[in-house]
Image (cartoon, rainbow, N blue to C red; front, side):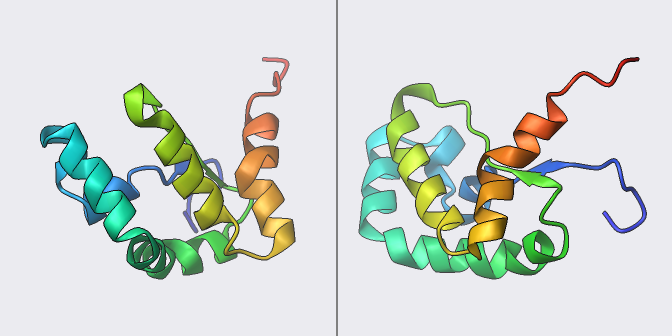
Length: 106
């Protein structure tokens, strides 16, 4: 990211790194693991992404395909974003995505 100023990142893939069942396992196993390990998962995600997000707060966005567990993922995303400084919360919560979606005139 340091050498590519036009690189943006959505960090919703934290589930792949943290819970292997997210993509290929049983949906209920995933939900059970999320609910059982909620705070440990948040801590792990913060360890994994905190330095990058704090270094490049204008280049990260939360995203998810929503699927049929969308509300659970939204709650996790909000809890994760809530662990950052309020100014960064706004950036990664919605301002970066809004800026990214603006027409460039090209």
